[in-house]
Length: 318
Figure: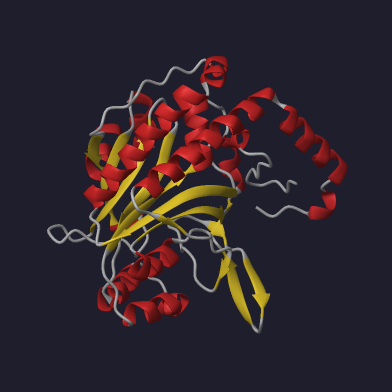
């Protein structure tokens, strides 16, 4: 995804940025997103969650399970990563803070082919949530409540915008449908997420994700080795994945074992391993993609319409 910055015309890009900010659909989407952010934050605070500041650079960040360029900076005689997600920081923080959330900016330098999906940005925000000694079911229950309350808030506060977008999203019912990763794959084939989303009328939980399809840090089912206590929330109408989470692995020996199973180098995660050596309790949590949630609510073609300065994979932008 290399692009020669010397070939980018700043004047042309600024004109594009101004045109984007002048777009009435963008303005309306940002208004909807403001309501969305406020609702999610208020709902979490009302449930005893503490907002903590985001971490932007660190010697430790999410390895992810798909190819991205690794954004690093050199400083103080070493290297730091730009945050791809705060997964490890969340797990460490809840050990002392109990229940937390972060409006977390993430940098993921996706491959250029992701530009056309409509879902990918290489700079985006997710509401990162984590709770100590919670199960996956508790996290899923919380996520459903947050989503239902946010949709209700948008319906009440952004009626004009939703009418302009031609969107009439009914209040969702608690207890979203669940389907296992393997069952979805058998039912829909290789592109099961896309097909599952296209068929759905309400959000659907994709659960029990195989180890090879995910990162090392989520907990394996005790009754089914190789299957993780993970979940993704799939938006309906073809908008696909909008939330990801699960229960976390916290035992030092099991973390080392899982890193080995993924064929990764423990040295890469020495900071997290040092924390695990101190002793950790289990936790569970998730991240909700703010731009993707906005895109779904407004029926937008691309998530870039849900942010003021969109970063589309493959392009250098303001």
